[in-house]
Image 1 (cartoon, one colour):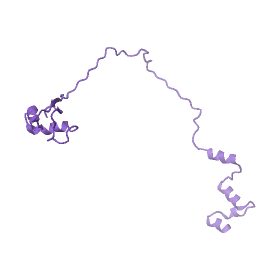
Image 2 (image 1 turned 180 degrees about the vertical axis):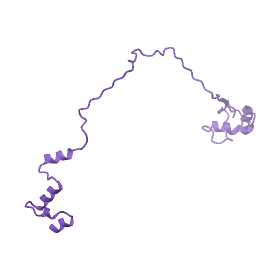
Image 3 (image 1 turned 45 degrees about the vertical axis):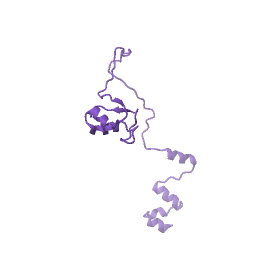
Length: 141
């Protein structure tokens, strides 16, 4: 054991004690050997943090106390309006197609895709509209 202690760089005086070597090394290094479970728990609970368990808090203000009466909102009115144009609906007649409907509402047959896009939930193919279908006609693009 002595050669291994020397390799670690411990002074020779540490080896010449009447106490067993491990206890002498522990004492020189400041290592405390715990003798009971209570000591182990106590050491494990130690923290080097300040103890604020007895601190008390409070708040003070120089502002005047708030009024106890609630605000009166009985005369408040609300209104909802929209800037979006309302869509028109059109019931498909015999011989209708999207280009003819676009020409009627927009003055331009090339706007058929606007009507088709607005009604995709019910139209799978722009060439297959059915008599009696109600189409949503969006406002002019």
